[in-house]
Image (cartoon, rainbow, N blue to C red; front, side):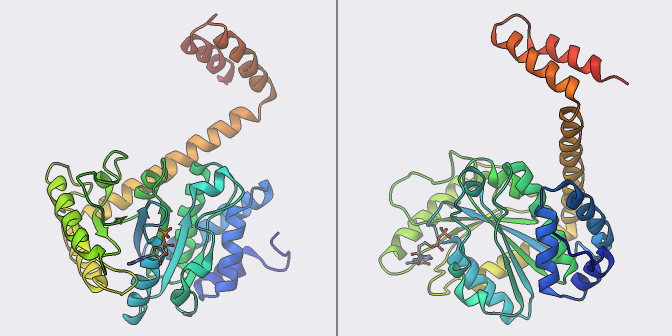
Length: 328
Ligand code: GDP
C-alpha cells in the first residue's frame, strides 16, 4: 500500500514537517494487517520515536448519546483559540464487532472538522479491541511527531475500551448526562473510578437543575473512591457542550491537574508505566504469533482442546505439555 517511490525516510520527514496527507498515509500503514507493512510500520515508529511525547493525551469516554463528539467539537474549538494544534482519534469497540461504527462519522464534529489546525482520524475497523488499542497508541505517536499538542482520544464507555484508553492517556474525562434519582451511571462499570474529571454534560434548559443534583451525587460518591491519579482529587463539573458553557472551566481544571501531576513527578511516572505496558502488550502479541505460526504447535493445541472439553486433562497439565514442546 505504500508507494515504492515514497521511502520511509521521506515519510517520516514529511510527518515531522506536518504534512497531514503523509500523516494519514502513515496511520493507514500502521493499521495495515499485511506482514510487509507491519515491518515498515515498525521502522517508521523507530524513525519518529524521538519526536514524540510532547503532547497532552486526553481520553474522553461515556455512553453513546451522552455528547462526546459535541463536547470534543466545543472543547477542541476552545483549544484552537488558544493556538493549540489538535488531533482527535477514536477507539470504537463497536467497529471491531460489527462492520459499522458508531463513532466513525466525522461530520459529528462540524466546527473542528473545518479547522486547519485540527486532524481527525476515526478508528481502525479491523482486529480485536486489544489490537485496535495498540494501533491507537502508535497513531498517538505519529500525531505527536506531526506537532499536534493536544491529542483527544474518544471511546464509547463499553466493555474494556475505557480501561485500554486509561493505559494510554495522561488525563481521562468521563461524560455523564443529568439524571434524576440516585442511580450513578458508570458506577457499576467502574468508569467513575478511573476518571480524573467527570463532566455532567447537557446542563442547559430544563436539565440544568437536574444537572446540579447529579453533580452533587457524584461529588459525594467520589469521596468513597480512590483517585486513579496520585496527588489529584477527581473533580465534577456541569457543562453544556451545545452552549459552550463550562468549557473554559474544563480547561482550567485540566491545567490545574497537569500542574499537580507534573510537580509530583506522577505525569512522567505514568508515561513510563504506559511505555512498559505497550512493550508488554507487543511482547504478548508477538509471542502468541510466534506460537501460532508453528504448525506442529497449532495441531497440538487443537488436539489438546478435545482433552480439555472432555475433562481428560486439566488446562495446567495440558499447557505444560505445549510449553515443553516450545523449549528450544
Ligand atoms: P456521543 O454519541 O456521545 O458522541 O453524543 P453526540 O455528541 O453525538 O450527542 C448526542 C445528542 O446529544 C445530539 O443530539 C446532541 O445534539 C445532543 N447534545 C450533545 N451535547 C449536548 C448539550 O450540551 N446539551 C444538549 N441539550 N444536548 C446535547
